[in-house]
Length: 129
Image (cartoon, rainbow, N blue to C red):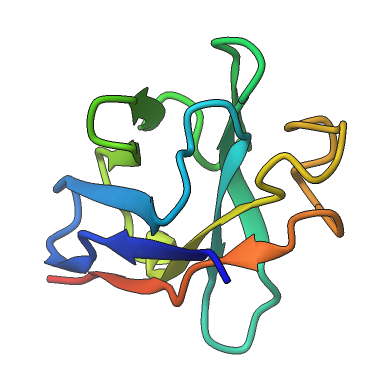
C-alpha cells in the first residue's frame, strides 16, 4: 500500500513561514494531483491547495491565496506547500492527499475529493506567539 508522508510542520510565530513536504514511498508522484488539506481541532477538514498532475496548474482556497505556494520537485519526488505570513488561524494538522491516478478528475473537485484515496498521517502546524 502506497503511503504519503508529510513533514515540515512545527511551531512558528505569527507572520512566520514554514514549508511542508509531501512524498511517497514506492510511488512516483510526478503525474498525480496532490492536494493539501488541514483540520483544526473541532473543525472539519478543509482544502487548502492542489497541484495538477496533468498540467502545471495550481489551485488555492481563498484562505491560502497570496500566502501559500504549492510546487512540485520531480527530482525529489516531493510536493511542497510553502506557507508565508502565517496566522494563528492557520493552526491545524496539515495533510496531503491524492488519487494516485486512480480517477480522471485530477484537481477538478479537490475542495471535497471523495476520490482521493491516499492520505498521509499529517503534520502539525502551530502558529502562536
